[in-house]
Image 1 (tube, rainbow, N blue to C red):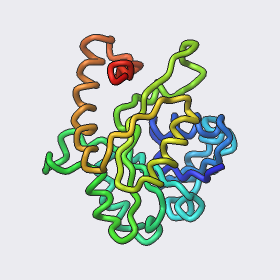
Image 2: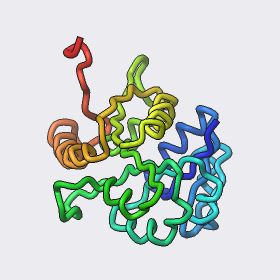
Image 3: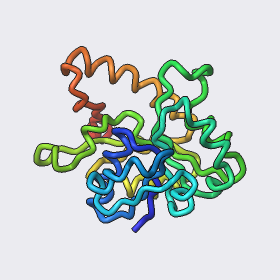
Length: 210
């Protein structure tokens, strides 16, 4: 069992915490206003709600699920606590990334510095597809992970599999820049062809590689 600190209480943070809590993982949420987020205990059964610093102290794995525009200030404030921890960056920069040749998760890693162990994951998954009980029988999602620390990627892959997902290793953290680009296109296609219901996603045909 892992202790997972989810920084952020939006749709993705709630969906991930819900799935992991149902899978038996210990979940703690980090919030700027923990006293106003007590409802998260019903979203993710048994989950605690703490301040950012308190959640980081408890979590072995840290999931950054706040808006990309807030990541730099968060990391700079809590840099020491993030050292050596597996940090899962799920944020999407959209048009806020000035250098398109660098992934948002690379920036997070550089800001942490030192013993950073950043993995990019869940970037191209809609929150609504992460609820296991909402899926059709046999339906599985795909989660793409990218990172430079193989041990950290293995932990994140294991957590994704507990959400009944198929995991695709996308290589180095630099490759996360392609995941960043995929998200805007995915949102457009979902709006254009799926009525914007955010229940779609990318499918990789593994049979093509056999």
